[in-house]
Amino acid sequence: MKSHYVATGYVLRETSNHINLLLVKQRRSGVWLPPGGHLRAGELPHKGAIREVKEETGLDCGIIDVYHSRFNEVQSALEEEGTFLPMPFCIMYEHIPASREGTQHMHIDFSYLMATEDSSAKTTINDLEITDAKWVAIDLLEDQKTLSNVISIAKSIRSLVLEEMISF
Image (cartoon, rainbow, N blue to C red; front, top):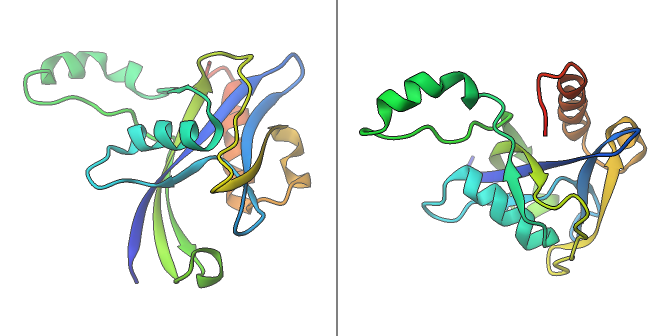
């Protein structure tokens, strides 16, 4: 079965009471998902996630790099040979049924934690791909028409934020 490389942005915004996740409503399926999509040929996954969020919502976002601060010493030793790319929060191998995207295939999904550069910025919808965008408290995701993996990942993110292992 054919595999496609995709990138997803789990865009976070904190309010006084909740950790909120940006969701977009997919035009084809009507499902609420974090913004994301297929990588272009040669595109780095983190750049694809940033591009997809911007294209779908109009928001300028940056990657929350949870892991790399732990690699600063190694990074300085590698500068002449290469560099670390921002690590995704997770990488998923997802089955995509024919009913969702035309033909049955697999997604290799690089999912990144992200935050908006301007916490008061408003979304601007790209109506070719999505029909709506909204911020949803992670605690209330189960009330949304979304996928179980989105809920599981978001709950993991919330736990890490509450344990102060992730800040944004």
